[in-house]
Figure (cartoon, rainbow, N blue to C red):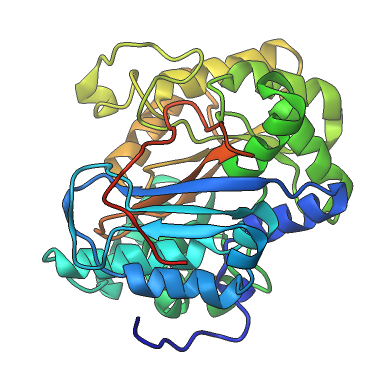
Amino acid sequence: MPAYTFPNDHRPYTDTYFIHSRTILEGDGFNPMVSYEVFIRDPGVVRGIDEAVAVIDTYAPDLAAKGGSVHALPDGSRYESAEPLMHIRGPVQDLIELETMYLGVLTAETTRANGGGEVDLKQVAERARAIRKLCPDKQLIYFGARHWRYDADAAISEAVLKEGWDGASTDVGAQAGGFEHGVGTIPHALVLVYAHVYGREQATLKATQAFHRHIEPDSPRIALVDTFNREIDDALATARALGDDLFGIRLDTPGEHPGQGADPEDKDTDIYHGYWGGSGVTVSMNKAAREALDKAGYEHVKIVLSSGFGKVEKVRAFVEGERRHGRLFDSMGIGGVFPAMHATSDIVQVEDVDLAKDGRGFHENPRLVRMI
């Protein structure tokens, strides 16, 4: 395997919600063995495997000694859509902070190997400016650190933040745009660990309460409510439990299924550009969640949207939704502001028991070979 030189500390290049998660897990004493599955939706030739493995080996050097392992397709292999590219197993505290860096490497190198170009910072700025123009009064946070290499994050973040956005998910990204620290709350990985301990129905609430116990008070309490397709149920449960301390909820429903409360069928595609109903984060689901919170007396709870909002047409659909239906959302976490073959990593097993967010799961792949 080639030799790579990485920063002494990975944390400045890491999404803040993973840093928070490590703090929370240490505070509650939870460190189960987990398995991650890495995939890319677009088929092609995978590159960056060796460097991604080196990221893990550098920052989790005792992984094998602790019973962990990394299996992956050999660098340069052709793969099919959503075929597992890597299975990564180890104690969650060793792995949870590394996802941003290894996914960024895989995404960038695979994009380049399949005919994609370099990130055009001018086009990034234009996209960021167009989104800000559509949402002049909304909080916009750049969530795209995992969508390209860690050593380009500062330049990309700076291009976005100069267009009037309100923060970035990593410290290096935030500081490039004049902010002190990256921002972020809870990832699906943390919710899945709490699901292992408390069960699926309690997981979102328990993870949010753990965040509330262990993270500094000036970090907004935002519950990630889509892990188990219980967007409305978990939004109301966390609102009841945290009351005025709950700043907001985040909707990040994956494209494998409709969110709770969503219209299962899309309609008015000419108005909503294909984002009214169906799978993923949709206008109809957003509307249902807002109405449920308001009806229960939780008008103060804000709604943060993420997943696919680097597409200007998707942003425009939700802005149109507000024009027609009133207040829907307050903030967006946005990553895909340039074309790339995005790599995704999900926890799919906890202590060798299948456990994943709805729509995802463990898939065998006999083509993977052991790297660590």
